[in-house]
Length: 124
Image (cartoon, rainbow, N blue to C red; front, side):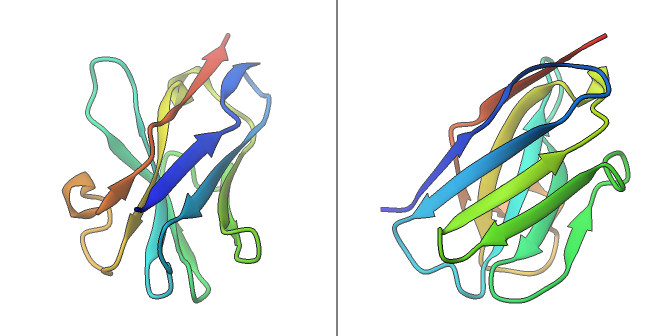
């Protein structure tokens, strides 16, 4: 049974930093993409960042590029999202996700596995 368990969310002031973790288990994620989405109250779930579990390279939403960094530790089966210079508009529930494909990465419906989410709140 695949499990993605997020942690590291919390309350932070604007300009601060947080690092989210996603512990992945239950299968091999070779040839999978790992990703982060977020959802603010009353809004649709939106793509934040993705990387390949096996290879290099990463992609980011324009709104977070230059501030957020996705990374992985394969020995720990963990994916991270380092978030710097946080803004109030970054507030939301952040979800870790996994997908065996390569296209349509910004579409939540193509991602197979989801964690339960972790709340990030950025105050002014």
